Length: 100
Image 1: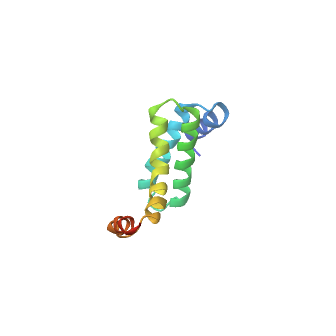
Image 2 (image 1 turned 135 degrees about the vertical axis):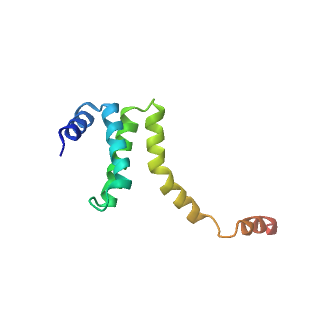
Image 3 (image 1 turned 90 degrees about the horizontal axis):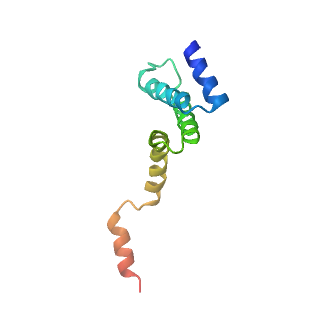
């Protein structure tokens, strides 16, 4: 582990430093596309999510922390909502019209 990465991890964990969490988030986000099979993609996804969560908690008032957290959370939420929707959107309208 590089000294820079160790420093960021320690500042994030010990001091809840928003800048350290932001650096970690961007580090893991960039590792998603450039790991070339060296890192487990699920592990990188989990690390990016954890860093986004840490950034959100450390810097709740910052727009950057909210954006990072939403980027991580929204795809999963949208998938769950989509599963609840009918395949045919017209089906819902027809069902409402047929109700007394």
